[in-house]
Amino acid sequence: MDIILLGPPGAGKGTQAERLVTNRGMVQLSTGDMLRAAVAEGSAVGREAKAVMDSGALVSDAIVSALIGENLDRIETRGAIFDGFPRTLPQAEALDLLLAERGRKLAHVIELEVDEEALVERIGGRFSCGTCGAPYHDRFKLPKVDDQCDVCGGHAFRRRDDDNEQTVRRRLAEYHAKTQPILPFYAERGILRPVDGMASVETVAAAIDSILDG
Image 1 (tube, one colour):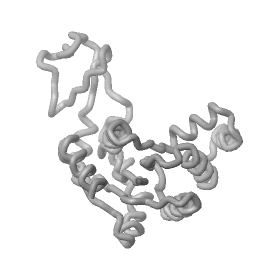
Image 2 (cartoon, helix red, strand yellow):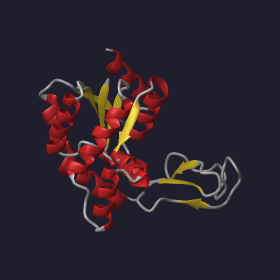
Image 3 (cartoon, helix red, strand yellow):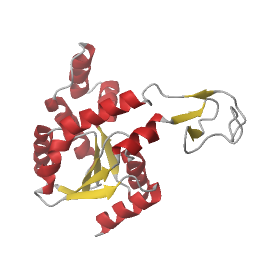
Image 4 (tube, helix red, strand yellow):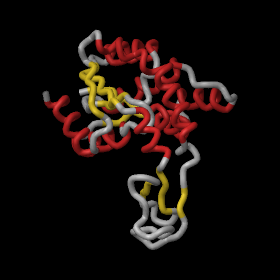
């Protein structure tokens, strides 16, 4: 069973993909991970991708498609979770062709729907313990004692540079401009499945399981 997980940054795609890999033996095909692996391996596609990236240019759809084809051949009958691809309509059409050439097709395209203002607040308020990595939030989960980690007692905290309102809003705008237009493409085929991405991790997981088992 091959699926796509869609949703803006921070919607929880990575968390749900990890669960599907663990519980169902599926394989997460992330374009970023595949590019890094191919470059490290020094494969023909990897060398081509490295040359493009070293020049400062964006890796072409043709190179990404070749990477996906290679990885589909490796996983054989195991189900794939596509992460980070497709992002555009031409990429969606290319994925259909890649799958068809291997006797596969998409079963579901699962879109994690979010309240964007709530998402901005969720991501923009995140920080963590610099010692043990325990997660915290400005509004939803502050340390019980000011400036002291509940887990390890550490006093150093950190925030990711991109966990701020401006960056989150820019990434949301990019998602709307580039990726959201592919939703009608899958809706017309009857395989688009919306899920409330603002629910708890467990509730989202149960909804995805219901779709996959349906």
